[in-house]
Image (cartoon, rainbow, N blue to C red; front, side):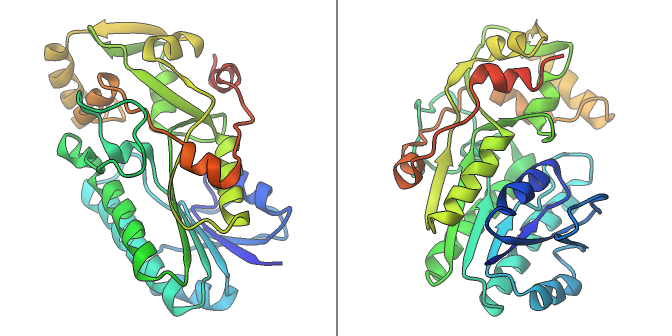
Length: 305
């Protein structure tokens, strides 16, 4: 059996993916936090990707496949720490893949890297520019990670590298930013805006990663779910009530509340509540015949109060 090393294995998505891959792979993983009660046949190493000890893990475990999900996606740490963990940690990982015989690499990025702008076309493909840092500088690290992985794909073609950019991920175990937003009782929205949004279930993300590995995909692929709905519909379907606010009031309020630690997202996130980021997943479907297992109703049910 091939051995897969998962970074970020202790998180919700890492645990789901571990259970999915154990059917066909030997699995090990690393994370900055421990996983109490992990399967007995899975080695979990508590280590920082930026440290020398991470290379020791790669050398000892000798994985042929790496799935990279070990990012900080929240804003509860200093911006420089988040940037260093995500960007320098990814650079270290890529170097180790080259030096220690890794044959396949999957990097889990996000559709957020495209950015939210009024000129966005519907159903953007993978050739659309990664412009998120123009209006949302707090996530420039995720854009840099995606760019690093995409460049690695061309520099080292002998390593089958696949970058996945999924739409908004929801589910019981994954604590995504959009999930925290939709779990509010009264959910703030921008007055006069109701953008179309796409969602995918956490279990379908694990399935997409497994398919990318099984098919030996190489390239950049958007991953989409069963469809799209207006933001206000998503709020109501998850049990919340939209709270419409004028943008002139909303931006300074968000900025102040974020600075004081009262909300988990900065003011730059407001553009994602105004403008649609809808992407096309046709390339991934053509390569893998991927079909989401969970409907929109089931996705929203996983968050419903």
